[in-house]
Image (cartoon, rainbow, N blue to C red; front, top):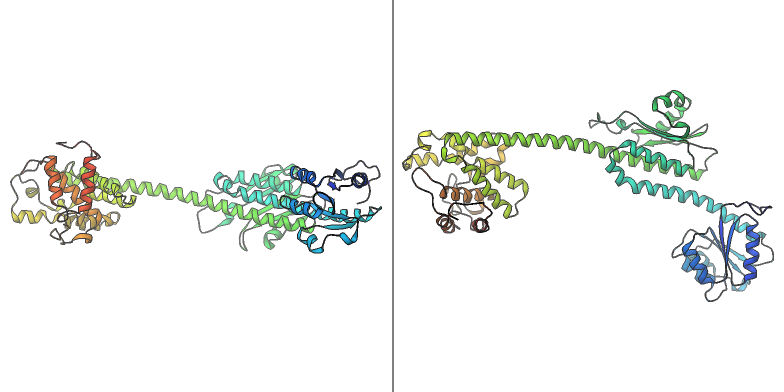
Amino acid sequence: MRKNKAGQQKNGFTMLVLDDDKNITDALYSYFESSGYTVETENDPLGALEKMKNKSYDILLLDFIMYPICGDQVVARLRQFDTRIFVIMLTGHREVAPPLNTIRELDIQGYFEKSDRFDQLELLVESCVKSIRQMRTVYRYQDGLGSILGSIPSIHQLLSLDVVLGRILGQMLLLGDNRHGFAWIKPKRIISSMPVENLPDDIFQGSGKYEKKLEQFLKEDYPQFENAVQKAGSSGEIQEFDGLFLVPLKANHDIFLGVLGIGRDSAYSDVQQRLLAVYGEQVTTALHNTILHMLLNINNRKLSLTYSRLKESYMQTVEALRLLVDAKDDYTRGHSDRVSMYAEKIAKKTGMEESQTECVRCAGLLHDIGKVGVSDAILCKEDKLTEEEFAVIRRHPEIGGKILSCIDMFHNLGEIVRAHHERIDGRGYPDGLRGEQIPPEARMISIADAFDAMMSDRHYRKRLSLAKAKEELEAGKGTQFDAGLVEVFLELIANGELGELEGT
């Protein structure tokens, strides 16, 4: 770069000249303005700092000895908010030059002893300009990559590869400073161990002269650089073609997702090529994650639908079994529903996990399923049962547990149903379990079952009043029932959380 003779054409670089000597700032302004720079001057160091806070400059020329603060202090404060500006320090006397350590620590790019000639200073400035050009490229790509990485969360939420690819293409054209380019990916290549029928074979987007349908692109453009694309895919390295730069999107040695193509008016520098390669890697990662995210969502939706259908089938089976019990015994009609509801309320009140609460609800509905193995003559007998008959009735928890344990979808309910007539003191049946040996779900159903039985008419007795039923629960605390769960149940009654109860 040499002086622009006309002194009018600007080279795109801005400069701030700071010196407390106005003659020097005027001279430097005239010299570098005529060389094509956009120059501003300042004679107050503090005023210059305010200017640089509000406006970005490419280069700062400043004197070392100034008032009220010296040049090194200006740069130290400057570096707190601007690390990109290039700084050249000026001094009128070699003996008062800033120490070398200071120049290094403050990242000062040049040092110049003042003289009547500015050609040596101009060489220093030109050296800065070359570095600035390279750094602009670095910053442009760095900012672009940051933009891509920053947009990944939103890209994942879009679930549209067309939108993702459009953003990638736009960003690439911006980074490459060119309007001609394309992005072409093959999503199904990403993975072979998962179903990918919901993904398209190809997605293509083009801009400028490549703004066309994939079919037209394949017919008109692709044959010219097919070999270059294949080479990029096999090597994973950027390929140059006549007027085109091809960036492979290769996730690993086996997965070649596609290619980015960007037109070029002149050869890209080594730095630009390396940065484009990095950009391609970042794009590949974003696409890889997006496609995996899509596949995960697809499979999650399928799993959710399957789970919903299984749950629906599960509850239909529960209802069918419950109706089977109801058909055997008039007393159980409505009883199982109420026991299930009461026990579920206890579970929720104690903070039981949702999955366990669901088990309590279903086990409550099926707790008397074992009665299908008891004869109608005993179930429907209006008189008080004999010891032998009662012994048969006492087998229904064991029968129910066996029935449910034989059905895969209800195997986790078998143990609960088997234990719903066990007692805390160990005097229950069928296994004589005591205390913590009894599953907590069964302890809840035991209280709900006993309460509803007391509050219902039986063949051989009338229902109890609510007050009497509560007394019986209190009396059974620590012997028949779990004392803590009884307290929870009585609190539910007191708060009216069990609905309208007879005798309240």
